Amino acid sequence: MTTELDAVRDTRPSVAAPSDEARSAARRRLTAAIADEPPGLYEHRHRAPFPHGFRATLARVLIPRSQPDNGALRTGNEVLDPRHRRWVATRGVLLPVVSLLVVAAVVAVVVLAGHNSAGLSSATGARPVTLIYRAEATPAQPRVTPRALERTVSIIRSRARQLGVSHVQIHTRGTNEIVVKLAAVHNLSLAENALGSNAEPEVYDWEANVLLPSGTSAASSYRSRTRPPSGSVRAAAAQRPAPRAPVACRSMTRSSWPPVNRTHA
Amino acid sequence: VRTDSALGSGQSDGSIIERSVKDPQAFSVLFERHFDDIHRYLARRIGSDRADDLAADVFVVAFERRATFRTPADVRPWLFGIATNLLRNDSRAERRALTALADLTAAAGDSGAGVVGVQRTEVLEALAALDTDQRDVVLLFAWEGLSYEEIGSALGVPVGTVRSPLARARRRLRKQLAHPTPVAGSDQREVNE
Image (cartoon, rainbow over all chains, first blue to last red; front, side, top):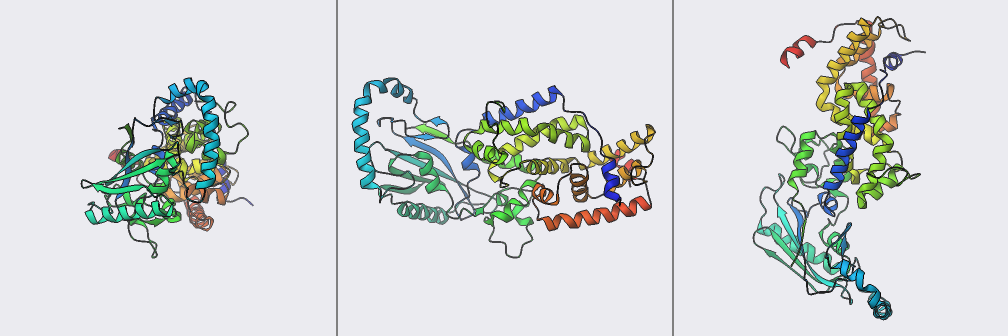
């Protein structure tokens, strides 16, 4: 039995394969997009915010120059300290020393196993790192208030405590910055994620920070009666309308995220 | 851009996307695998010239949103969904393209009855008259051969939600084909634009 859908199927136009020129141009655009993505930025752009409406973006990572680079501090594909290259060149000379250190490290790991987690450690070889988060106003939270900033500090402190990090100093700076000083870090990416990510990985704020052409936030378009407060919607609900957002909205979200600068102090 | 043979050969789309979060270059494999399909889909709906740009947009958008990808294996529905969403910004252009295709079909003397005894030009005009949501579902189903599940995955809606716009679209198509009328306001649109 034939139907109207068969009639539609019958009208399916035959189209030629894309031209080499079109394929090359598209490939160039994708390559440029890949190259434009700074290491580590991706995770930050999609990271859920602290639960006060404003967005806390990791703005700077400070690593003292006086500390030796053991090659452990990496984020994404980037080695933070350029002296890593020199270390690679001279490692042949240091192999005997490294062998001894490995033995010592094994002992340290066994001793510290009960206290260390998420890449944060006070073991030898780690180094102090300062993470500076910068709070940004969003449509859901037009002003970054001192109270919200202080509450975020307490959340970070709580996370650090849960992770077993003892030597951590957290304080606000100026009107919109939170400074987190870690005494010793092995894996910077893990530390950033452990402290800076949302305590509820099921929650996204993507729509809350995207303006539709009408000027309202995408989150306001939800019709669910059980919608959580503005700025935090369930992942399942957030992902449904997200792909339907117009092109204009995508460009707005991208431009609203500052690049992540990693600076050596 | 590394090629499929150098990277990701034999890997599922899902595992490549997962890998591309840490290694962005890995995403280029998906481009090589699916660019032609996506381009053809867009070309069918809006014409080759515009499809060149939009197909490139699809992969840039997909790259930027790759962490939101949830389907375990096949990435095609997801890419079709992104392409469909991008097409919504060009819905008027798509209606013009469908009308133009109907005119071309008539001019080429190919407007005779199709498999169901309906003039192809009438079907194309009926498609142009559908709402965007309904047209998306109908064309993904009839032209691209996606299943209900894949359409649901593409459009980010449950499978049950796919059936109702499809049923509504079928009713409208049936009605339109029974009483064919020119696409409403096509001349007026040209004036406005």
